[in-house]
Length: 477
Image (cartoon, rainbow, N blue to C red; front, side):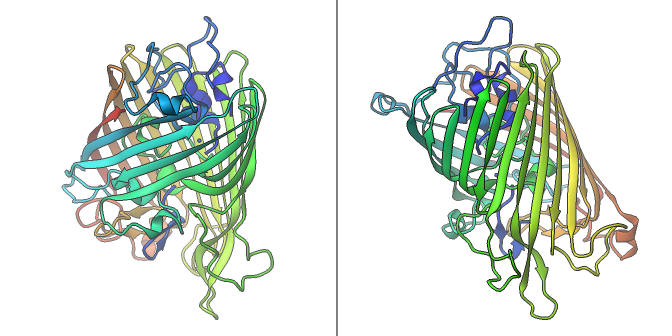
């Protein structure tokens, strides 16, 4: 993938496509239904830089940093990589990583931060990610082979494990080890095939901490999208304004776990699915648009009332990401998701008018605005509306010991303010404030919901809003 060829800032180009998780496929009984050197840019455009501004940033890194701060300061050397050796570099292999440590809490004094998952424990410091990467990047214009292995240790492991892979070796409550990427590549930067385990193309925010502006995540990312896939992807970059990716995967957050019902109906025995994306960018690199889609059979949670067997249905999610660099300092990002799952809920349960019985829908819109106050200080705001149409996706805590309350049929909102302060080449500090609120459907309330024990926030899950504050520190090595 040759995203660095674009004249966009790298974080923009990467946010628009990539090779590349969403919550884990299965957490207990809860099935989580719930990414060669670059040519020097022209003087007339903003250089393609990221939170790890480094000349010749590998294309895969650019993808991982797609939702990072639009940092416009270019450092000559970029982040110091202390693990690199001449022996490996001579063979085209780069080794590097980062550590992310933070703390956050809600104003209600609850032990858990409700539906805020990655940094889910209130007033308890977390090492969210100790992240290690080994990769060999494809050559730009000649046939070559490459690949990548990512290891993540920390409290975020829970949300990145895949069925049949890292889900099998983890038993800890707070800390564990995940391998969100393990793949090989063959081809060139502009035409190649990727095979193995990799991050999704869907959405804007990403798993690696260095790839995001905010410490917390949007509901769309936490609950509406897959995180990883296993399969084969082909990438074609016919020119600097177009990138096309498509292939076959093994479903959402899944390594090799088969569908649970071998006697499903015609066409339902295979969990092979489609994953693809297409990105268009303007000639001057100031705007870009990505459309991405994932679709295939999944065990969405529905049960046959006669046989008691799991029902298999289609699960599809489509995302749109649009970025516009208005000025050298001001950048706007729009993202929207639309998701659908068949045979997902009780067909007799409450559903809004017009809902297909037994099906679940979720959709939402995120808007981001970033402003570069100085070369080392960036401000950002995120406004999100997320619609859980059938109370199917969002859960107040997924970790063992958390409330685990779900089924919120209605609209969830979050407004987040944050700063990114870059200290030298390797350290970034990310404070943020966040306000969440939930607007329930009246029909859901009429069924007896809306009281203590049924709401997303508060000590007793009795509140419909929450104020949160947190800060983390990311150090690259």
